[in-house]
Length: 247
Image (cartoon, rainbow, N blue to C red):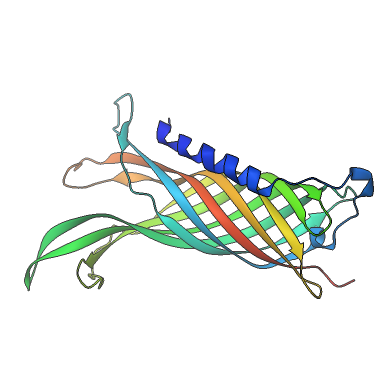
C-alpha cells in the first residue's frame, strides 16, 4: 500500500481546480470548437514524481518500505483530439516520451587517483500511450476542461555515478536498464485558447498513478535477491500547441 505522504497531492489538486474554474457558457449556446478535433503538435511537460518503493522477500509476508528521493521528468507528447457531436465532450490520445534523474546520495569511492566523492543518480526513460476524455466548459475567449483517462507506460530504470565536484560521469557503472510495463490512471484540468491563424494553445495540470519499476534487486546487502516494486504519483504541467485539420 502507498504511504500517507501521497496526501500532499490533495492541496495541489484543489488549487489547480480553483485556478481553472470559471463560469461556463450555457450548454444550448455552446458550439463545437475547432480545437476539439486538433492535432497536438507538439506538447511538452514537466512532472514531479512522488516515488514509493517496496521490497518483498520471497516466502516472507509483508513489504519493506523504501524511502526514496523524488525525480523530475521532462518530456514531449504528440497526439490527436477526436470530437463528437456533443460540444461539451471530446477525446484525446497522445504518445509520450520522457527522461529524468534524481540524486539518491553521495559516497566515497576508491579510484586510481585515490579516494573521491561520487553522487549516485537514479535515471528514468519513459514512454507511453494515454487516452483521456475531456468535459468542456466554454467561455467567451477560452475553453476550460476537466479530464480523466487510462494509459499504458513503459519505464526503463538505471543508475549513474558522477563526480560530486565536477559532475562528470564515471564510466562503467550501471545495473543494466530494467523495464516495467504498467497501466496508469490520469485525472486533470486545463484551459485552451485560440491563437491568431488556425492554431491554439493549451495548458493543463495532471495527476497520474502508475508503476515505475519492478525487478529483482541483487546487491551486497541482498545477495540472494529481493523483489523491488516502485510506484509514481506524478504531478505534471503540460503545454500543447494545437493545430486543427484543414477543412
